[in-house]
Image (cartoon, one colour):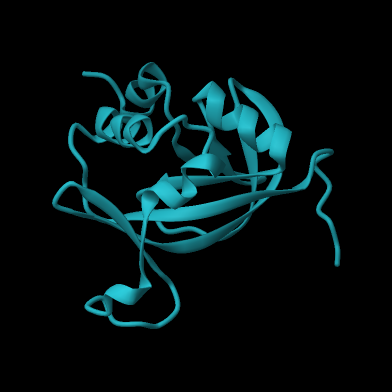
Length: 147
C-alpha cells in the first residue's frame, strides 16, 4: 500500500509537511506553482486549516517564504461550489457566500471545472472540510520580511 504522501506526488497535487525549520507548503501542480512565482500570490484550496509564514516548494525546489491567509470555508451545494468568507456571518446568510469561479483567475487553473477535477482526483470525491487560502510571497530569498 502506498503512503499518502507518495499518492499525492503521483496525482501531481500537494501536501503539507512539518519540518524542523518550519512548515512546508508543497505545490506539485506546475500551473499553480508558476502562478505563485509569476504573480506573487495564488489562491489554493486545502483540507487542513493553516495560517502564518511557511516555505513553498515545487518539485523539491524552494520557491519562497509565503504568508498564508484563510479566506473561508468551501461548500458544494448541488452543482455549485461556494466560499463562505470568514467574517463572522452565520452559514444561512447566503449574502456572504461567493462562487469559487470568482477566484479561478487567481488560482493557476484555466477553469472552475479544472480546479474541481484536481480536488476530486486528490480525494476521490469532493470532500467536506475544505478551506480557501490566499498564499502570498513575502520573500523569494527565504528571509522573512519585517514590517
